[in-house]
Amino acid sequence: MTVEDENPLVTTSPRWLNRYRGGERDQVWHELRQLGATVRESSFIDEAQFVCDEMAARARRNVEIIVERLGDAGYWFHTNDEAQSPVTPYFPPSAKASDHAAWLEATFGDVPLTLLAWARLVGDVWLVGTHPMWPTSAAADPICDYFTCFPLHPIGSTRTT
Image (cartoon, rainbow, N blue to C red; front, side, top):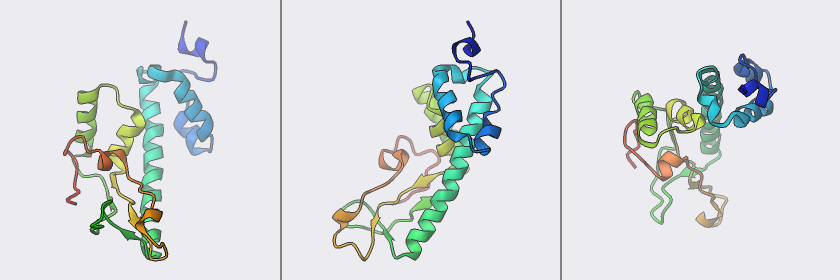
């Protein structure tokens, strides 16, 4: 039995990237989830990674816009502690980002393709902070990516704070 037999929504030529770009994002993600580990087979992996890379590229553009707009609105990015030391909220991926992604797979085995795309294409995001209109820092809801909150390995990291 082939993957196509098990899931008639998926073909050997899924055109996921074109469909994703064309607005069928929910359907494409659904099909990718339905494949499970099969998505890593040679007939699917490249197209699946293209979709994940497209997602990460969109996320990077959104992160850049969010950081700019928050800063323009008076938001203050800082460490998530009492000191609240200023931090740079976003570092694009370094030249070693692909090495970091390869290290993740070598160390942990099959890492979600979305996580690998984020590591290679988005970079380091830290949106913890406060706004002058908020009475206390308790009003802040810390948002950070997994690599920043729980660093696994220094490869590709440019954060110094």
